[in-house]
Length: 381
Image (cartoon, rainbow, N blue to C red; front, top):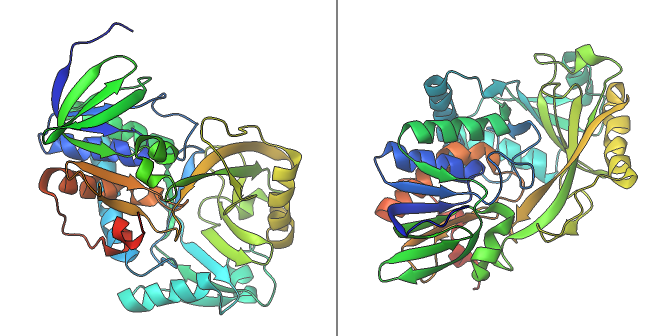
C-alpha cells in the first residue's frame, strides 16, 4: 500500500466490527469528519461478530439497567432497516430458562417486573406443548418474552458501513493500527500505511482492546468460544415461527441457541465454552471433537430432535470484563479518548445504541443514557 500524508479528522474510530461500524455511522450522520480503521476485512470472521446471528432479548437477566438501552437498541435497529431496506432483526420470542431460583430465571423476572415487560412463566410441560423442540426436564422453569429474537450480525455490519459511506465517512480495512498517542488536546494514530491526526479517538477494538489500551489488560480478557449447527431430525420444530431463541442455565452449562437461518441447521453455543483464555492473535481457530461433544450434551439432553448431522462449527471470541458488564467510558486520564470493551459475550444486540452513546461521549463528553453500570471506576486501575 502506498504511504499517505498525514490527514486530519474530527474523530478516528479504531475497530470497525459491530460497535465500531455503528459508531462510525452515528458520527458521520451527525456531520463529523470521521475515519474508521479496521485491521482485517469488513466484515471478518476473526473477532466476535460473525456466525450469521446474534440474540436480542428484552427480559435481560444480567441487570435491569440494560432494559432502557435495549428499548433504544430496538428503535435504532429498525431505523437502520428502514434506511437500508434490508431486514436485520427477526422477532421470534425468547426463552430464559433454568431452575426457578437460578440467576437466569430470577434475573429475567426482575427485569420484567422493574420495567413492566409482558411475559409468561412456563413449566417444562407447558413449554413443550407450545414449542415442541424444547424437551426440558421438569425442574426447569422458562420465562417467555415475546419481543426477543435475533440479528443478522455480519449483514448489520455491512449495512452500517454502507450507511456510513453514504453519510460521508472514510473507512479503511486491512490497515492495522501500530500505535497512538495523545498530542495536545487530540491524538495521532499510526497505522501500517500512514499517520493520522484527530481531535477525538474512539476505541472499539473488541478482543484487541488491551493491546491498544494497556490499562484494559486485566479488564478485557479474550476467551475462545465455539458454536455448532446441526441438521435437526424434525426440522419443522426449529424453523422460524416455531422456535424462540433461548438462553438456558443448567448443570451441564449455560446454553444459548437459535432457529434455522443462514446455515442449514439449528445453532447452539455454551457461554464460556471450555473456559479458554487466549490471545486473539494466537488462539486455536480450528474446531475439535471435544468442542462438539460439549455442545452435543446440550442438544441430546434438551433438544433431542436437533441431534442430527453436523452442518458447521465456528470459533469466535468473547472479551470478558471481571463482572461481565460492559466497559463504556472515557479513558481514565485522556478525556479525548473514549473506550467500549469487555462486552462479555452479550454485547452485539446493543451495537445500535452503543454507536449513539459513543458518538455522544466523543463529541460532547456526556450522554443521556445511564452508564453507571459500565464505568471504569468500578475497577481498581
